[in-house]
Length: 280
Image (cartoon, rainbow, N blue to C red; front, side, top):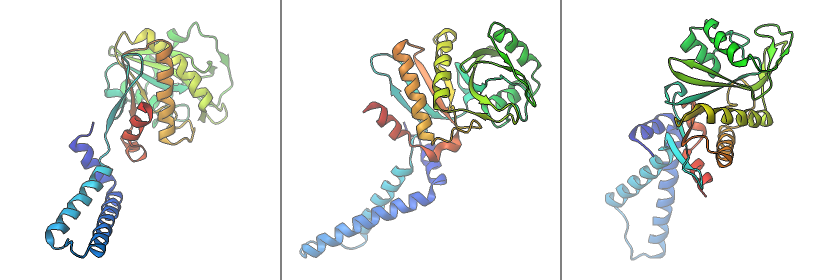
């Protein structure tokens, strides 16, 4: 699914690639024409019309290369669930939204919670950076979960198992926070890896089954932020899609699952290749 705005974005964000693709296409076409006229002298391909055709074809090829879609759909075999991958804003999607957090479920912006993280954006956008009402909901959700008290330089000191979930409601919108990353108590630096990510996602999907009520489930590109996993966008996206497919085949979560990529990742991944990979 490609729109004119996707084409414009591709041209603006990848002008160098567009120029290289047009030049490569033109060079190939020109070489073919020269070979034909050399080996078959009776064939005449010259003048402004053939040149215009080659230029238009080369330009079309280049534009098609950078005209990447901003969304795509992956059908999960043997069920009616669709996984949609799109560039956009997680908070503007309808349905339940997943928010990866550290094992401490911190609520203080700064060292404990980076304002650049999805968790930090939630606190800033809907709680004004003031965590009081946020913490009230968290305390109720986590009251029955066993935790370990840890001496930590800043933020909360109760550490919960990876995969622990908590439901936060904002103006009737549901957010499922899930413990995805471990935190160094001396530096407040969060970190995660593939094993922790897979385990936490399992618990997230399980909670989502109970909370979504048929509405879509939305996830950001988990592991791409301050957790420092260091994996390329394509690999993280494939891990998320694989997790969603695995859990859906075990027991359906909902009919629509979305992975929301930040627009800054547009250069990093071609959704045409992602769709092709999962539907081969």
